[in-house]
Image 1 (spheres, helix red, strand yellow):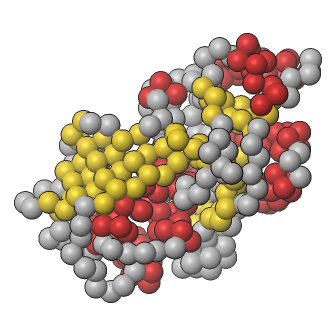
Image 2: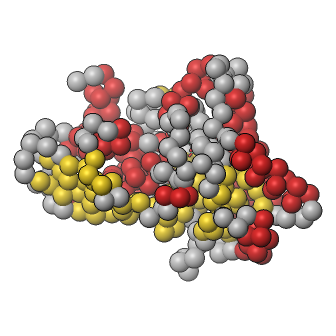
Image 3: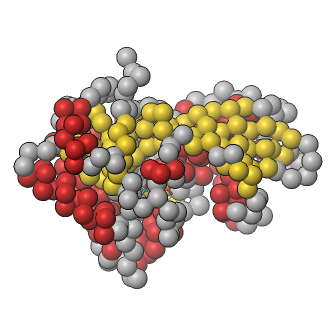
Length: 337
Ligand code: PMV
């Protein structure tokens, strides 16, 4: 077993009972999330411990449902959106590695079926909702009644942003300072903002050229701008939390947009340069900036991909649809009281 796996296993062992009962079939759903203040850079790559806190909005019914079923035989099975995958494919091997951290027993085999409700055409392949749903399904399979805090810590080891996918609405992932990561988990921000909207502008729906994990490591290793990022991102996270509490869309939008552009600036300055944004992403940004100069109140954010996401309130929805007829609009609080 390699060193990183030993460390991850120790982390799981600390949070799970030493002996697990026989597993049963289980299913779970987790929403995807979009960071308004980004996670970018790690203080520990083995446990995905971030250099800065981050804050996200969950995408309600846009997410992942994962079913895990214990099976006989000597092979696990992984199915993604109805297609049986080769266990050595990147997706299947990541899922299987993660489940093995959970059960620690080489003789247990699972069939893992993952269904994304996120339209493929939206270009949002979500490792966040994927790992969150898998973590929850595995906990249920082993009859464990884990708190969302514990689930958040475990899912973080699969994918950092997954730590934020255990709640609806706004969620903050506190970076924590402990070496074992037991204080690095997400928590919900108890604010309901009924007229808050997110729009996804699909720009390039093909799989990205470089994973966010690789892009993040390359940037923190080589970008001369990176040293300015963690403190700046921590401050943005605090400002955005205050703006959420005050329902101040202007402060929230301006800070989220500036935070995303700062993250992309660190990547563009990496050596060699890394740019996930495509010409169409820049055109969308120009369009938003021009419209904003004429009064539109909508702001942009982009992750490790070309697609642009917009943040605005319901009273801007008609204007946003006119400007971007292809936009997918999400109401994150549609079902909350
Ligand atoms: O969780 P990962 O390893 O897919 O990284 C996510 C990185 C960003 O999406 C760019 C930012 C974020 O906070 O979600």
